[in-house]
Length: 234
Image (cartoon, rainbow, N blue to C red; front, side, top):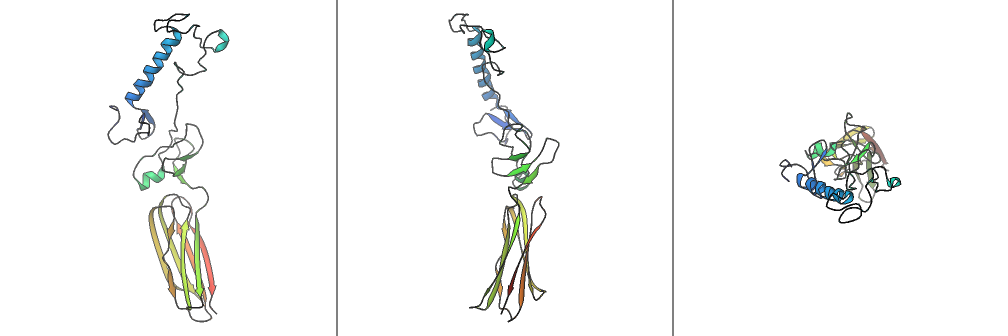
């Protein structure tokens, strides 16, 4: 792999390497492909020592126009009938770039559409090469607030989370109110994550009070999300 720069990402089959914007053929693999294609072309045309009726060449002529001219049509493929596989050249994946400091290409074929996926399962949206790659999720980010009163222990507890984000830096905040007055605030910050959870907080409430827990989640690309839970203490 003499033409592969040190540290470059190489495909699983070892035949391609990523230059930051497109996949390039590994020199050794490309030489093998072209050599095989050349041998097939020589056999089809009789250039390998055969003729129009045998001896290593095709028994009929090789035509470019297809089978209708009495010869072998290539169907529009390169010489040797080896199709060229073109991979999507958009990206790189914004989640991998931000969180892992690496360039991850799209795993789909060229021209598949505007929604892309890398080999690590992250998604992004990008219409063309001039557009900025934007992280994408299947669904919608949500926040969930939980507030529970246990009459047996006379304790009220609160927790919550935010989920469904593109992988990145997340923040979740929980504001706890008693009769409209803020009594406690807690938060948690998570990196390289798609979800973030608050620790559980609890206290002994006064009788006849009304409690409220407001959870707000924020993360990459999408607007913050919020959820509220309430509990009345008898």
